[in-house]
Length: 330
Image: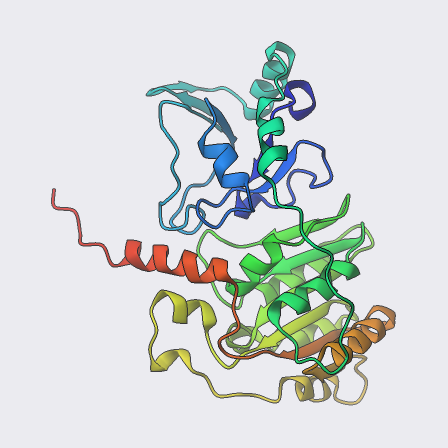
């Protein structure tokens, strides 16, 4: 359909990776006010928009702040199509999209508009070996790791927002859990993905320290089964995403010596390897070694407590306002 229509194509945050980010029509992630630069403006100013298989929740819509006009919306779900207050049941999504591709008239207007307003990012500076790591610089180095065999698993939290900025190479995969926002899920998801994968891949998992404490023991199972993920554990001393939604003393946690846990899990015969890094140079060396290691890798990255993405700050304020709204009386 994208090839047939020449329209701009965006993905919702919970669908990142479903559509190739190398496709010429791809314009980024649509996430309301925290969308990729230029994406929000193109989507919400369109004469009409087709959403294929969307899941609209408070998390995927930034606290229901997306400006989608119901009269312009074509909502295509697995077995029904809705538009202009009408619903057509028993219409298979795939059949609908294939039929539409044969009828639609190409129009590049939205792509031309996007080219006018998109931001051209300046090249990132080279690694500064003694510079303390920031979240932005961490993800710059992670971007350079990615190839067609990469599988990125983004934990609930600030990793959501930072991983959305990664540009996936062709055939690379992406996993995120945004339906319930369960923290700690990515450790088990990393284990399950590697066990269930039928194709050679390298799982790169991003998780915060607070989330990791809920499910850390599954790293032991990864070592047991000889799996080879690279886990970046971002240690900033607490539940950052919860701080931005509703702060309180309960968002501060007991710190662990995370990198040393690998020695605990290895016992006598494990092949896990870990490192604790605080500078750009240390991170670069750890990544180089991790890519060659034939086993589980855990890299603990020390980040300042107040270092989080601007998107999390804005998203958190919208979700907090939505959560704190008064109940609707019948």
